[in-house]
Length: 157
Image (cartoon, rainbow, N blue to C red; front, side, top):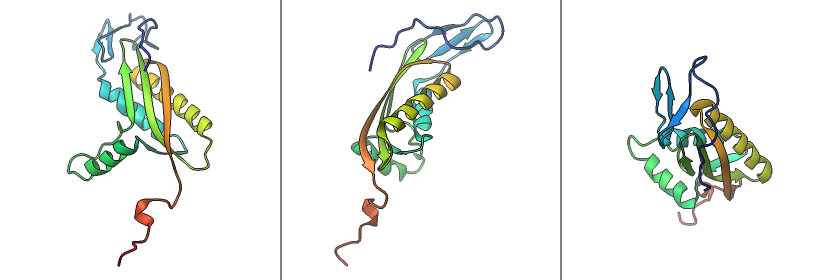
């Protein structure tokens, strides 16, 4: 992931005329009226949800992450998988995102990747107020409908 610079100012101001500066590595927002701090896991969750909103995305995460996610989803109290396949680097004013995705077979991979980038940028900038410097998309698998392991008939009865 590229180094995240702190050159650009955060988009928008919370109140007219309020001075805005970014502080802390976890995305704090300082105004004359007070400070807002955004934790890195929040940015991770926003990016994961935004990627899943895009048509053609079957799942996030690499093979091992998906397997671990399936196991942890079965544990009581651990139903949140929105950060699976998502890595973020948050600076004072900016964020960079790495995503690992599984795309539906038949979809245009470059088109889906671009839609993921656009939606992740729009959501992080809109929800978190951080400028997004890059969104790297790694496609590690294709999902073919009906090709799930659970659908295969058992050879032993």
